[in-house]
Image (cartoon, rainbow, N blue to C red; front, side, top):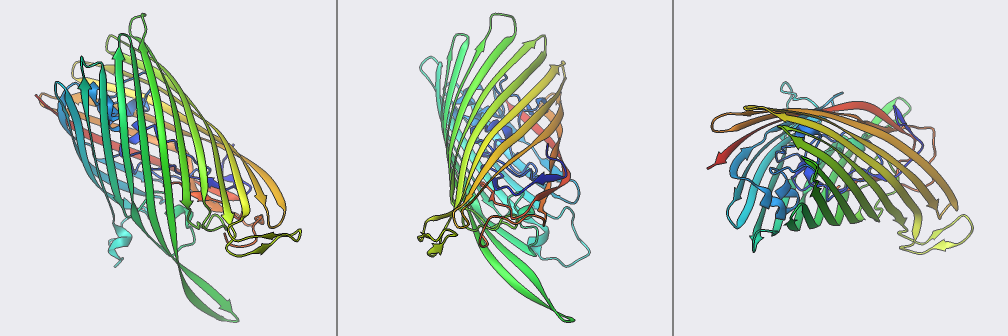
Length: 482
């Protein structure tokens, strides 16, 4: 079990790609992580009716969020509405925080339906505003902008629905990046994330089926400044060093879903199969590793099953999802490189190869009850990460393996207040088991030189973890259009 120390050197993937502005509902993008970095809820930019029920997915509908995940499931919208869902999250131990202010509109008619959303966001990387100092504006305020839309149509008798959606983010910061450049004096991020989705949805008697195809592209640039202190005799000299690191990830995803209303009153079961094919053409040179510019590929699956019962105003359910994942990264020689056994690796040949085998598990349980004017919800999600790293150093003719695992917990609760002309919703959740990783000094990495988007890191020493908690508040208002 991972606690204050993660063990020997690992190489890994932290964040698969951002969730297309749909929070946990966009489960078509599978998160791949080898480092438990506390990143916060940066991409929670639209409301979810199941927020307080730990994001139950497979057997419980979420008419507010489902259309952003699969555009064709906008057919489940019961009425048109305007929404706003401000979110604040903070990371303990000075880990920073963020404030997001989104607005959205959902429209449904006899045949057509759709939605549009826009959000602006301020991320504070250092955990506190320093009003008494003359910091640069970029150091105390980081601006991110988001926009997205989807549109769909019910076909024929309404049994079939088709939809298409697109979203884009202009980012000056992505959560977690600053924690992987622990020794940097300054980090300037810039870039974008783009997401396109095609969806289909069908109802037939007690059965419902859905499919969605996703393409997601992360393109970020990290301008990193280091202040190196050189000491000789009694004198010190500061040398400024700058690096430009590119972070590129391209993901194709497919998800097939099914659920069925059972004959027993109120019972529903659901299942889902998701596959992601990821390419990582450019990977940043993080402090945690010493192998720059590694390309890589990942193949991830998720097999999910859920069961729920809704009766007399009470809904209770549980989800379980198994995630087998394979990920390969490598270092390419920039010049002919002689190996320990006398051979020569040509330009473009692989000097170091990393192969990861994951078997992750996610569990969710949630319950909610609807009174006449108030709804109460609570839930718990647990995420177990477990992987084996096999690393081959073709220069030193060396091989090593590494096993790592840890668990993250997220309890959540929410309340809904139904007023005459609006619904008010407040939700809160806490994530534990993550923190700020670092590198110890008692391990020599098997690398001859200095070596999400996905964050692919190959640490050059044992990782340590400073525990932190992520506390997230979401308050949203929904105004029905009737």
